[in-house]
Image (cartoon, rainbow, N blue to C red; front, side, top):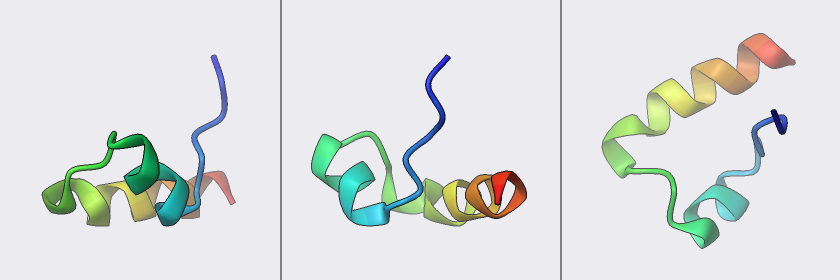
Length: 33
């Protein structure tokens, strides 16, 4: 599995991140470090 891209700009550019999920995305990236 690929490591998630923790750049929100990259994520939004790919269209994979729903604004409502942004907080969760941030939390996961914070845990990964």
